[in-house]
Length: 464
Image 1: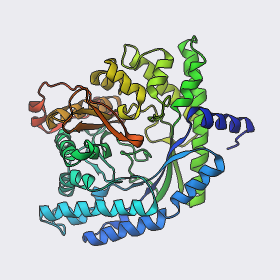
Image 2: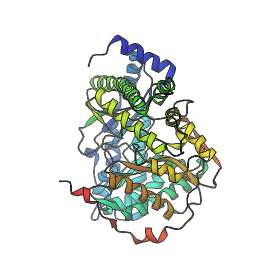
Image 3: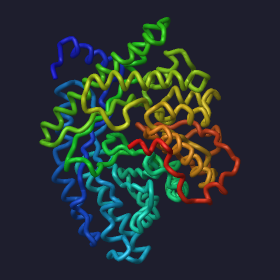
Image 4: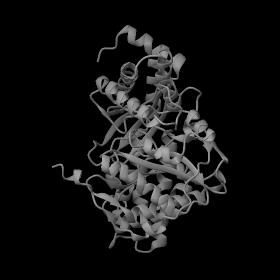
């Protein structure tokens, strides 16, 4: 791939003036060889694989950052779904039959992952995950039961649980479990305003190569070690649109496409170089525009530049235009697009979205409608601490339905902040940010959740 001098100068300008960065370089690792009936052996194997494969990850990424002059904000790991590794120990007939010992085993594995991530210098490690869109094994059942304690007792471990897919439908038993798990994780981390929930995301149609946290995991179709890169750049898009206030929407779409192309070229270069320097496979570039808490680096500000206050009528249409243009522009810049690829709308990480909530322009219902056209779902949404688990489960079911019916990835990362009520503010700092507690319906959904079972796959699942 040839990079022209003009592109280099444009990239320098985007970095210096408009907050362009590569949001994450994530090394995906196959941990399947770590499986063993003895949990101590599993932990030792995890430590050995990560220390050997990821020892040079952070130094290599920092050299690339210095060489190209493009900030790389995060360096992360994503592993095989850990629940699968624990089958020999936790399944029926496995080496651990006592539920208390099973919980201790899951927490011990989380601790081993946490320490291994710290030892190699990454900020988060994803893959503490379960894939239960159609059913739950006995080992996965025990894994899910211990999940809140595992997240509460670690700093870097992130978890994703896939409860639905277009092919399988929605596992409502798993959806119910996740509402309970979110509540428990919030209560166990009450001193940090439920921070444990920020490391837990529930998916429909989970991608196997997502570099972003908390949803990153290393899928079964991947090579042993793979570099995936997540780009950023909302500030760059916003700055371009501000100079074209009176242009028609097709011109705006074209401007976004051109800008996304340039941003993605930078991500492609970093991905290719990192994979080559580390001697691993080059994976994907995730085309997503990911906001930060920096002023101007916001999806909400892009929507305002297009001409709509976030949450006002027209927001979903403007977000649809943005997401589509980002995908089209990014797809021309790399043949290895993947992950989530679109536009993120995490409330706690986007200053303009937070202000829209405070102003009463953006409600949870409108946010849910917006997720039908963006790349993720209800992300980093803070709700009152007394929200029932069944209400959280019902909200998850709604979001999963959007993903299943539209054959797209959707997800829920929601924080019922203990002791907080609507209008209160929560602050975590860093990339997780903070924001206002949003109102959620107080009407009861418990009878619906109590039915359990499975919502069948839609007719489009028969596409073969």
